[in-house]
Image (cartoon, rainbow, N blue to C red):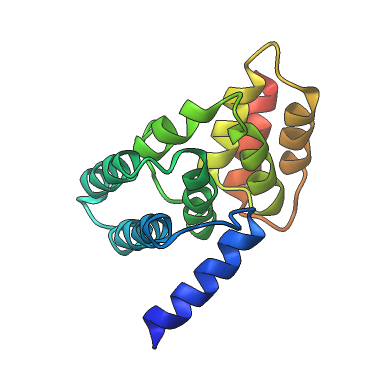
Length: 163
């Protein structure tokens, strides 16, 4: 039942994201992505999280999901706003490959909706690009003034703005 419900919800989600002509093989890759994210989430507070994260991201790379994997990975970060994903970590290495290909807009939306220590740091990396749109710096400033998020995230945004 749960697998069927996931499949139905997954198809609806993928159609919403613009994947209207997805075949069973492609859908299997997206199911695999969700399973790998769950595997990472299950180990997020363990000593071997870094290794699990690297293994899972390697499998995501091999599945060739590309930019479509970025949002689900950022959602994982959103669910764990203070988690240590590494410096920068396997997920960041993966998603930043899609800079100037749409990644920055997905990150912008993620930080706007639910900033985390890690996504604010990633946003600052975009701000450091002298050619980046000013909207990223503006979002960093907005984040630094929010009262509905953890104070550590606010402080992080403020610290980046000072530099």
